[in-house]
Length: 227
Ligand SMILES: [Zn+2]
Image 1 (cartoon, rainbow, N blue to C red):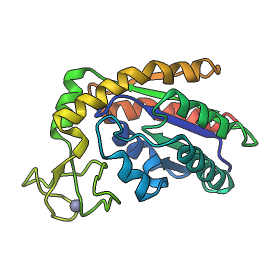
Image 2 (image 1 turned 120 degrees about the horizontal axis):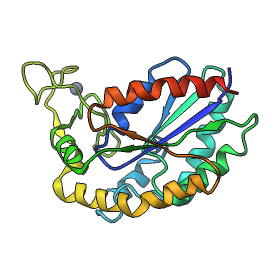
Image 3 (image 1 turned 120 degrees about the vertical axis):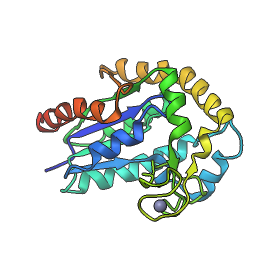
């Protein structure tokens, strides 16, 4: 087994990217890449200071993170598929990703997925989703992974019993800024792939994210076997 399939998953905030990657990433041989887990605390802290810089990480850091991550994944005999949660976030990150992947031999198949849903669903999801500061020790105390509430109390973590919180970036002001930025960058991300001859698949998560994951699962299996 060798790395044969890379699945960049991008889309607007609260569309279900993380839930989707968690669902699909559990199968053996698959790994999930989240950029912020591969950059220093200092770089992360600098991204949190203003809504303009929200989540913005400089190109040098991105290039280093991609190179070291994919070199290791490529050497790892237990990994055949990497899912990229919320990456790339810009046209230049598409270029950086493709430059990194094209150095790998044998080459891997690249299957970008754009998660789409309507604005009403995005706002509703952003309003209801919660995170757990105890279960997810984020370096800058900005946890992102969806927490499961207990059956008795929607604000209690089913896993640790601690108090759940809204995600920092889901506050109405930050969500608006993140949605605007996504709409400014999405066309460039799509073009970055299609200009390189790589088709982008749109996946609608409006009904359920689990249903969308079920639609995508067979595609991932067939692609990871096609090389
Ligand atoms: Zn917890």
